Image 1: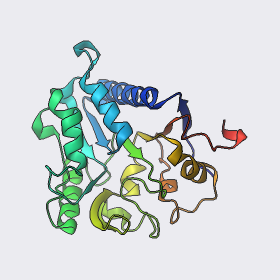
Image 2: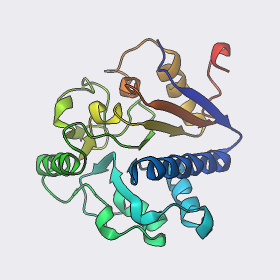
Image 3: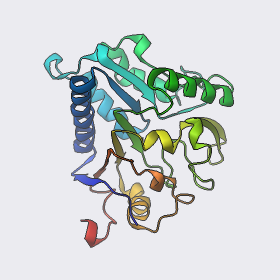
Length: 247
């Protein structure tokens, strides 16, 4: 049983990045109009970076009310914030420094701490901001070549310690600790948007989207929003191995 959601395929990575930036802006405007605040969980990766750079270059009239935007992260590597591998560093350089988001509105995962302490601190931050059942207006996700998303990796039930909201995980493939929000938080999102590009993602996307449900093997399959919408944004190369039923 493939995940639910809307599949959107674009001609190339540039068009995909533009579409992802448009989702960010449209979701943000709706959230601010309806609730006065926009809470977004960012992801790392090439496609989000390109989308962030587009957001940084938006004309003022096309931008959001940035003081009403609160930025979080779906996962982070356990490295200091100035490390080139840091998702926070990438987002800051790509667009956070270029827009008028108050620094106190940026809730980074403190990757320089002990992994368990960083996870506990971030879970406490989410609860302080949004209560025991945190709900993001937008959760941005990528898809790894092994089927992982956020820092939910194959080989372990992705919903382990789900009620913790945030947990530390050791990524064997990268030989490093990471901190990730859990599926409980992801699936509470009002909008959850996957983005994937390139032919190297074609086989894994087809397996995740069309294959049997096996989240231990393909953790991205655990993403099934409870009441929100799920968007899959791909370029044509990443969608190239889908079967005829999903074209």
